[in-house]
Image (cartoon, rainbow, N blue to C red; front, side, top):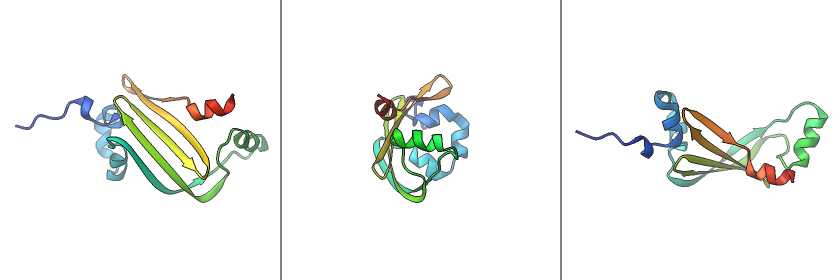
Length: 118
């Protein structure tokens, strides 16, 4: 008989989503099944709010400009109960910590954004 892996050995999102994990596409499951660090490269579209103030604030804190088909690099770093995402569009970089607390996934305030606001 095969012993199932302990929950501790499962990816963070699999532990959090439980049975819903198996309803995700294989590509999304693979993305969140990294061990250590992986970087993915692709294209994205960036949209901003319609109000001029939204554009001013986004530009002043270093968020990427609006536009379609921009190159994006996403680095995922998995460690124990945390998954850090570092997204880079052009020269604009933003990191987010995802942590599981009980049955909830919590997105910690982006450290890179907080640093830019100082």
